Length: 352
Image (tube, rainbow, N blue to C red; front, top):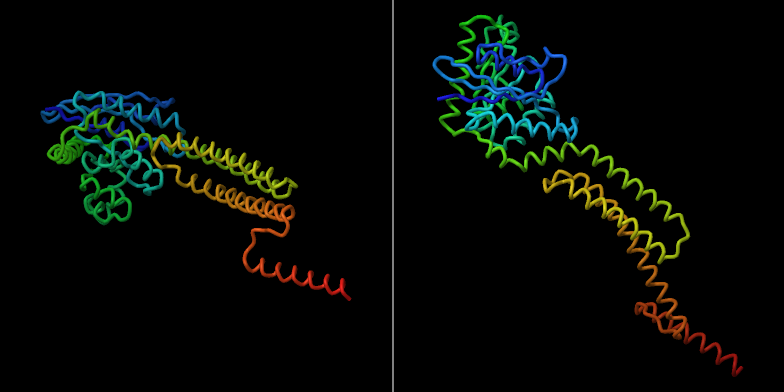
């Protein structure tokens, strides 16, 4: 029965070279060796140790926060096309990492993209980690003789968590070696890890990929966050400046309210736009928080001026209907005493 492997990883981590090492043939062209970056998805097959091995290469992981929505959509399309190369899906997703570099935010982001593209449990259920640049590892550990397995077990933080997530299915590859014994050993180590996956789960299929739409939509929204943040800043800056000018103006209370309603409409319209762009992924919570602060400011100003209009109307009513005024009991008592005092003074001067 054939073994179907999908290579994924960041550009420059050695995916194509790893594919060549697995198949023991130079059938994939490393991107760094070409003058132009290609988006081709390639499938190559070889029979090794009596096994038919299918390897698909060409899926590079971009940075969803900086590469733009078009590139992210393209990556999703490439992932779907890569899986369509297999008749039944893939047995394992080979996550290619590079030994000798820090596990940077870019590397962590690449791992998160894998989860978003293929589903949250893709690494746990189907992931096998291939650490490339094994020649550098051998040089670094030559003096103390530390094995790759011991080195992996000694890792901490995000790397340790990643190794645990994939069930410690990790292997070291030296893609530069011409030693046939080492090449065979690397292949057999990889196949033993792939066999662990095959015992646990069936193939990861194209239908499974298409069912992971939520994570893929979230990737698209995240790629738009920078532009959405800029648009939100522009709207809120405009509203804030308008509110400041409004406070310095001589609008009547009713006109002031109308201006506040106009600004609230602008905020509501942008908020509705963000909800559409969010596509139900809840990725814009920070932007919504910024908007809520401005909404609260508009609401407070409106309430204050509505109370002023109500009070002015009461004063106007009192002036046209005698001394009747809708006032608190304490105020009514004071007014009553003033009226009695003035009435007493008038009587005094009338008689004396």
